[in-house]
Image 1 (spheres, rainbow, N blue to C red):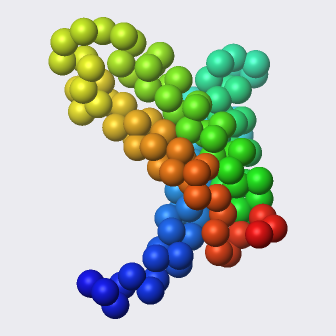
Image 2: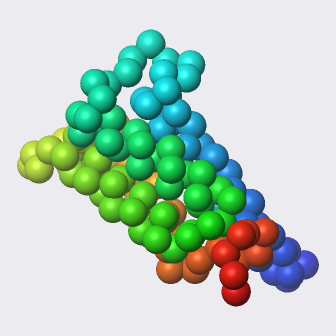
Length: 127
């Protein structure tokens, strides 16, 4: 496994790029109706979330203002998990596998990690 350690920066950059792309795709679905039958009303909380997903996802993907974009994305996903998935209910509804919040929880922590680490390599941020 020591042979893989030398690729840590490249693996991190690929994770950042793919996570940013996937996140921006969720935003494109909400805001632009791309490959989706559902578009929330303009100005609604879901629409604003879609704009954040689209913009922050693209910024994270290309590595521009990576820390700020990832911090905003992490916060949005925390709100999404607590407000739309968990809904502050006690009992089994707390668990992400039951409340269908796995993706929101995972995005929250992945983007928090990205906000702590920054763009690293293959990014537009200045070092």
